[in-house]
Image 1 (tube, chains in turn purple, cyan, orange, green):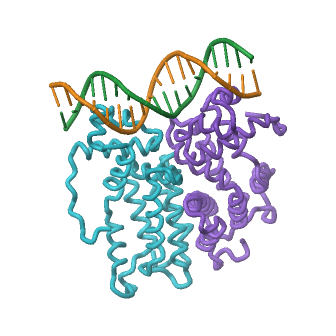
Image 2 (cartoon, rainbow over the protein chains, first blue to last red):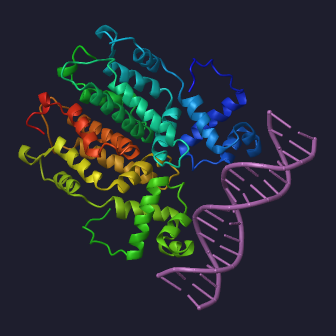
Length: 207
Length: 207
DNA sequence: GTCTATAACGGGATAGAC
DNA sequence: GTCTATCCCGTTATAGAC
């Protein structure tokens, strides 16, 4: 738990490279399906050399999740800002749900390796013994908090948290199918979800 | 491709037991994260004894998917029947989308181990080298075919296939979060999705 | 900072006895 | 049908040289 904004932590370029390679390989084959040798080979150093930087496989995965996946994006910055808003957020400052998810899809479309990492770990880490188990528990809790926060601009009569959670889950789902079959882009897939989840007859003016 | 209904294939009770244990362990730790020793131990035989029945780990997973996961349920039977309907399906024989998914959720609620197996393999098998890769490719194709078939009873102006696909993806998503945190039941979670995806103002009379 | 060497163990699969 | 024993390979991690 850090009480102040952490400076862009200095990361040894070799560590950076190791994390990038690891993110890709963990994403492709999972934690159990990836060996340190695979990673070392791709980085171009020996297994022992690799362990010199990361100390253990467990720790490597944590490094990857924290340094690679948790890069703050523009969308998440906006949400985080509103969460800290003092008092009730006025209507004109609230975020539009469809726009938010559209931007999320747009961002994720550009980083398929990280989506792959997320998707693979998300399922693998259902196991309490998995090194990323806690990470995803906390992530789920954080997501729920965002969904229930009064920061969203939506039509009267719409149960905002439920719609938010549904949209998050649908996003998880289309990411899997997108990764398996990239013939249709992620944004195309999201378009279909958007039309289903935010029908114009209800969401006109709130898109 | 089988041209006739296959008789309920005789399965050696020991094989049945092996498949059950394997389904659970593959679901919990994934294919790569589960060893034949783990399975043999839990069954109560030796590794060699286990391999006598299943010939290889690859093959064991295929057996599990075919024998355990593909058990036909009442919902799927109804769909399959309608898919083979001769000519256009009349409105009164069509299936109601919300009811269909509600039943799906109800069934899956009762078989968490199989949902777990599905969820874990679904992500792990994104990798073309994974033994279940083809299985899930075909499954995706079959699902899409169902979504696009003219067998659904829905309000005018609703893009049925898109809604179907969205519902499938949302179901994948809530299954993951349900498995991670069973505090809320799968059906409770689906209720929220249902309210979001099938608002009464549009779906009245089509639920 | 990176290497080779090695420890110590677990993996899948096979041979052959009973 | 099930076992023990074995093979051979891959795994993570450590020790110590350069």
